Image (cartoon, rainbow, N blue to C red; front, side, top):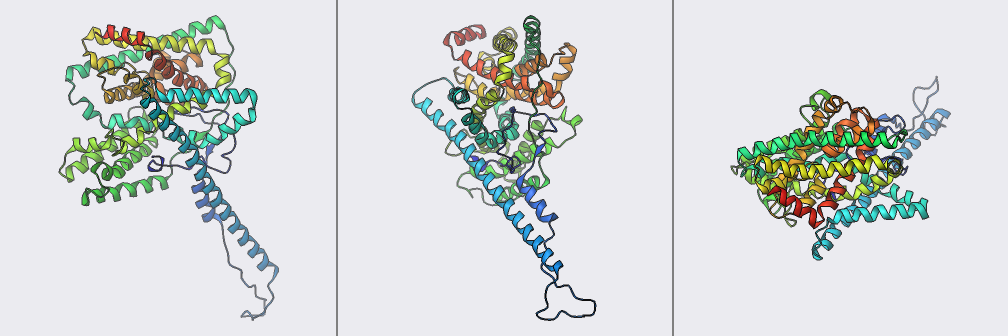
Length: 518
């Protein structure tokens, strides 16, 4: 599955073995200490372009018109030859480093994906309803903590080994949210318009209420404990997408689109045949969206650009193939492991996102320990408020119980929100994912203005309030302008989903939520 996903090698430079002191899912802050990590492939191409490789030449004397056979080479001949040999050695070294980096990424990411897959299969076989990836996250975190206490070098080595996989997940994280938006027309086609309006009201009002509750709670606890803040360590930031990457995926999209039109069963099934161009359109939309001006991103988020790109590709293919839009969207997300679509490939990484939280929390362990009172109190209250207020608002506005249950985890990241609704019968998982992403988009566009309106000046309160109400998308938007709030966003982002999953795993809590929903 990892092989089918767009792989970027920008973090596989020759310094990839250095341990990054800070890690956050979703977004990172710029730092002069940790500049953009360079793409080894791009570096390799630049080295070829900038290296002057000259063949040995014969330097003629002033009285000679032609070189004579057997003429002794001058010192300049030998210097040029040595430079040429040095250039060849540098190119060979770059190739070797790139190859090793690719292998390192494939192995580290493959281990995480395999662990997620086998855990999921084991939990299904044992009929355990608790999220398997969450269990795996706790296991990884426990191992890291134990190693850090007993053999610190082993803990650091483990973190360094998985760093390429973690940076891969970090760079492509928004793509894992997109499938639910792409197939949104399928998810809402049977939902009445009146119910759709009620859902939007709950999402907008609920986001604002959750933001306020989390922020005020953090401020109140801060005033009681009076713990002084310490400066957060700088964090590595993935480099932007290169024109070469955009061009490569454009070629894949065009070639696979034309091939699928001419040969509908080229790869055996319609879903597999449509997979390359649908995946290509999704990736291209994301690359283009991330390159938009910051002012335009406020109203046209990269995820929206990404989803529209995939939908336009599906519409175009449906039009030219005379099959229509809805069947193509059905091929995008089949939810059949034996016949996956582009959306299935992308959402297959959601479990790895949860596992990566273990590494993120381990890196932030000192910060968590120092501000434990503010963090855990705010997250606990905000998560419980989000779940129960959503159930109550759905009851008050007369929303259908199944739809209310589907949007209960609106403030929890998609990977864990889907695990939560799987604990309830009759929930629409596609609607759940769409509601989560829409909540994140609302937060991404308006979170900073609302934080200012509510006069949340403390970085801890701003970070916790943002992540507790708008998860990863809100975190990315806020941290881009306020890097000092990023560590608290990262912690709250992961812990909100973890605590929500743990709470909903308790039968009494689920029954109380169902009683409120009606």
